[in-house]
Image 1 (cartoon, rainbow, N blue to C red):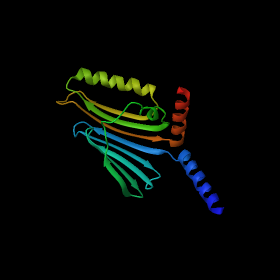
Image 2 (cartoon, one colour):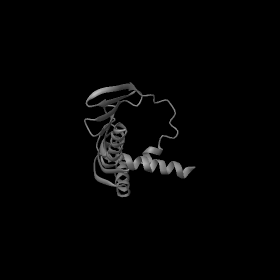
Image 3 (cartoon, rainbow, N blue to C red):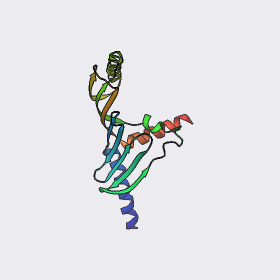
Image 4 (tube, rainbow, N blue to C red):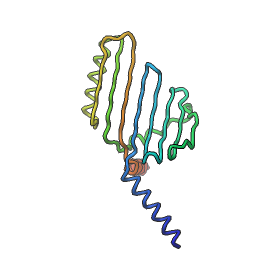
Length: 166
């Protein structure tokens, strides 16, 4: 019977941690190097998840206590129909973005600069830093973004959205 109480206490503790400790997200995109990397941390070094590589063959790795427990190439050609629901339900905060970009046509660079400023007024960014390059010989974008996501609130928002659609 005491084993059941200990197990129940551990489950309650994990549920409290899910609502109290935010998931840290770091995303990097560099079109010059054709590189993309997404890193998720939760109670680091407890859990770390990385997805990196090109769009054609991303590599997913999962680490527990800094030891790799899973690593595989992700299937990007599978079903992608209803996977946006969890992203829409995300309870993000402390969003920081650093964007460097340039296009051969300065007009497109200017329109992009204005569009990013307009979107930043609508979104809840803590910090947005953009560095447009109006004089460049190539098109490029380099984006570094970080955020914190509350896992518990995100799951509740997702479930509320699912229940509302039925």
